[in-house]
Length: 102
Image (tube, rainbow, N blue to C red; front, side, top):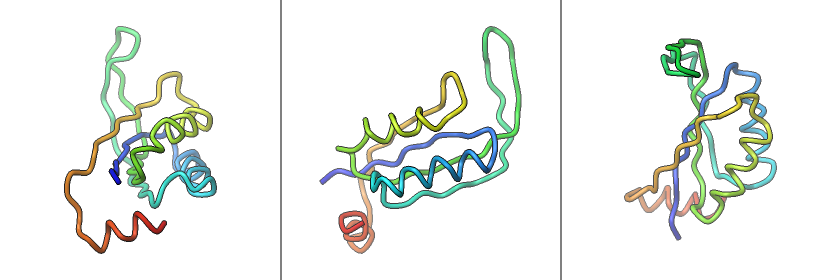
C-alpha cells in the first residue's frame, strides 16, 4: 500500500476546517494538519500578488488521490486551488499501521 501527503492552501481557517472535515467525514484521508496563517506571494493573471492563507497537510492512501482532489475542489473557493501530492517513501511502522487502519 502506498501513501501520499497532499498540500493545499485556503484563504481562511473556516474554509480549511471545512475541507478537512469533509475529507475526514468521507473517510478519504487518515489525518490533516492546518497551519497558519502564512503569507503567500505568487503570480496570478500576469501580476504579482500576495495574501494570507492557511496551509493544509493531508495524509492518505495513494489510491484515493482522485477522490481527495475532487473533494478539495468541491469545497474550495479558488478558481485554481493548489493541490500538490507527494508519495511518502519512508515512514515508521507504527505510523504506517495507523494509516492502514484509519
